[in-house]
Structures are given as C-alpha cells and as structure tokens.
Image (tube, rainbow, N blue to C red; front, side):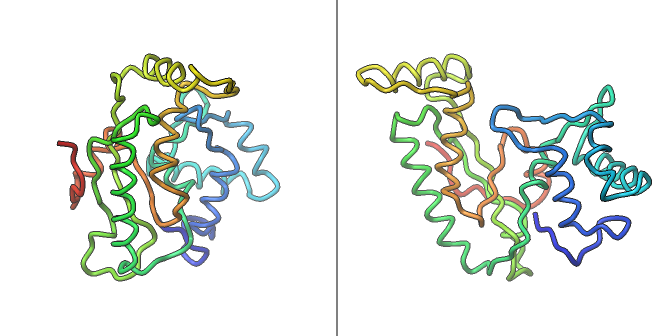
Length: 221
C-alpha cells in the first residue's frame, strides 16, 4: 500500500496525512491485534489540527473503506487499517523484487528447519502490484504468510512449550514476553527489517488475497 503527500484522500487531507492521523490515534502494539480508542479521545487528539467536520468526514471514510470499525463508540483498527498505518511513501523498481523474494524464501526454509522458532511456514503467496505486468514501480511487495505452530495450533500450548524449550538448561530469564512472542518472532525474522516487504496473515486475509491475482511461491510438502 502506497501513501503520498500529493494524493488527496478527503477534504484536502492527503493519503500521507490521513495515514499519520490514523497512526497518531490508533497506535500499533504487538500484544493486540485490534487497538481501540474512544471517539471523544480521538477528537481531543485532533481538535488542534482539524475541524469537527473534517474529523467526521475523515473517520466516516475510514469506516466506509473498512480501515476502522466502531463498536460502542470505540474505534478499532481492522487488518486493512493496520496495513494502512504501516504504509510506506517510498517506491521501488519491480526489478529489485526478485532478490528480496529469493532471500525471503531462504528465511522461510531456515524457520521450518530450526526448532528455535515455534512456528513453521506452510505457504507463501505473492499478490498485489508486484504481479501487475503493467507496473515497473511498486510501493512494496505484498506477501501472504501462512504460519502454523510446530507443536499444534493452540497459541497457549505453543507458547508454553517454546518458553520451556528456550529456558531449560540456561540461566537466562525472559521478562515482558507475551503469549504472541513466538509468532511475532517468526514474522520479524521473515521481514528482516525490509521496507520492501509487506507481510500479511494469509488465513486472516485469504478472501482478499485470492479475490484477485495471486501466486503461490512456497508450499510445505
């Protein structure tokens, strides 16, 4: 997903400004998939920057485009919203994508072979602008990742097994690690801090991914 200071989103607010506003109001956390803020708190954050009318128009568009949800007067970011928050303003030549994809597959194989990672990659799927033959410039490489626990899909059991495996036989103590740490550890390793890669949960976004052109580039045998 690409954002720009030149492309207007609504009410003279660019897509880049809209992204930054959403990022300010609904921050990302590894511990929660959906982050919430009450309507009045959002208004207090933005009242110095935008009029009430602009705030209403902007958030109504967010709601219409399924970037956020509103339940009981609380805003929740959706999967699409989290991708929008993480959207980059940079662009890349598509010719540079092949190397990044090859390196990603090597990291996938490493994860599947190394039991220091609690999850394995079952499938990797390319989709989005990287598959558009008419585009030479892209904003990122959209990749669907299907992760599965090596010792079952129960998050709690996978976490307990992983922590036991990691700590036994060492003097190390691990503080502040939540139940999703083994999962986020895999995703961070796969991304490898690459600004070109945009990783998506394949199971959560399967309907969106397979609605348009996609390509399976790795599948566990």
